[in-house]
Image 1: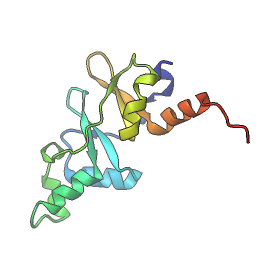
Image 2: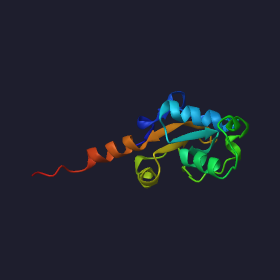
Image 3: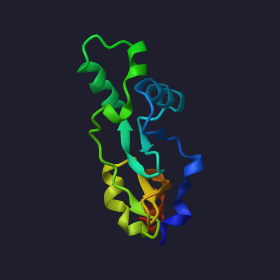
Image 4: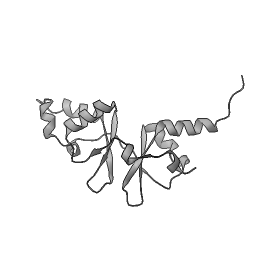
Length: 137
């Protein structure tokens, strides 16, 4: 089955521009209660995913960093430890299963690598759960 049916479009996705600060990332993640957020570059292309862990490790490894100081750190300068592999819009659900094992969401891009949305792990699991035979007890 084509993934477009499961796509959460970009205008409904919480994401960060690549030129955001660490403070903006912290505040957006806290407000939405997310642990990972896609990052989009100036051309609208998917640049990667930043996680709470990335922010935490940056704080730990930056002596003297205060919350106010996070306004001067750009997220593009923070090492990202997670690689959320994107898929193209013409991918099939079968292409997402192995990604959903290690990613909370799968970024979706068009043929020009422009970010167009995500597919959440929940939708992938629900799709496969409906296909699974029900055990009669």
